[in-house]
Image 1 (tube, rainbow over the protein chains, first blue to last red):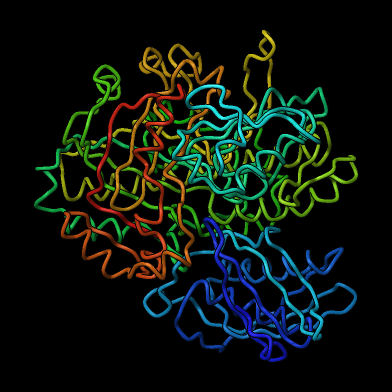
Image 2 (cartoon, each protein chain N blue to C red):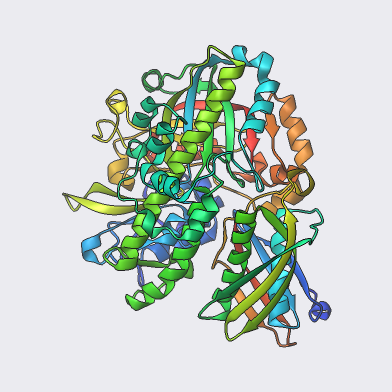
Length: 145
Length: 476
């Protein structure tokens, strides 16, 4: 689990869910928590390094920050599906519940990435976006795979 | 779950009495062992579904139930459109019309044994599986819309399938009421290159052998004999269904609030059937059903090609194709009267009993084949819908083994390579792009499918016809 003294440093992890997988990112800003959670999404799929040679721009809106987090993950999942890519680096800016992201990655290579599963969508299950007492932002939810 | 939380209305039926906002009771069909092992979340989610407007009679939960999204996986709920009933994107799920088909091959185990490895390799090569795999079919916008309205019929018209298959597919291969204009461009874009692909997660193609017959008369009607080889395909509506689920889940959140529906869980996002968004979701969801039916028909065609190449005398005929994530308008009995209702089945299979008018004439005497997928390395089952399922569960039965362990725990407990080697020693060949994926889908991560189908039989949902053991498994 998350160690308190490390909370200010950005980080990510997966967490168990009945049939699928949970992902969690944290960091000193909301944007970093979102970026870290995206790394956790990639971690669900592959243990291999992902080269960041191509970039894709994504944008999304939502009525609140939790739905925005789900929309962000679903935007990545969509780009993965239609571009047949896997992403390894993420940059996010959020203004007034409008998110702009740049995501970097490479085409999926089944031999190299040996993807363990394919994400269907981010869900509202175990969805939480919050700021802890020490100021660290945390963003988490379950991914249907 | 603690059995004492339920009223045991039958040795195999456990009732949650309506309390609080529940409009109807919840009824879980299982034996005591399955109830004890079942996730607490199943109880909570059953209670939540029972609060939705327009719900009829009860929420029914199948013996393979586990924690789902909004609905428990294994949940069945029917709604009355005239009583403010709802349609729920969460109740259908992200993988619209995910389902299973089993095809007979006219071969026996001794026919395929000498070429079992070639068969495994050819199937793995010919059938795109896993993230990053692409099919050879690319749909332009016109073809996309034809597929979304035509389903398996569309696939057959394009040469990917056989006309005689249609009798053995739910809705005769084509779901009526599909409206491609209700499907977003993003959902269509996600599907453009995914026809004929298996997907990932728990989806698979298996070559199996009939290893046990429980009901000779039904097995004769289904043409299943000991040591016969069959092919079973488990997959759904791929990216199109996932995107429709994602988009409507979000859109139904404010729609539910606007309709004055209090959602105990955001994943239960729903809208009145008689609303603009409710009708739009129905049009899109039915298009996704057609996408799944077409997809399974195409993969079945690929399997025919591989078998035809390796075994020229093989003839692959469809036993049946069932979906287990759907909402369908069906007529069932309630309060002594027949009534059309919107039946959601999330991880549950339609299981029409004998004499149901929607069954093909040659199956009508026996009842609908209900195909229960196990996990790699364990058995799958063919059941026959029981007449009593009509009264018990709006003619529904279980759909699989159901997970017993998270992917995280499975990853820690097993090594994929070891599982592949161990299964090979038992004569089961696994082909997958990911050894980690194999560990996450390890047979031990699932419930005992034998206990699940036994419970379904004893509860009166369906009766066992045959057990199938795996010979080859292609995992996405």
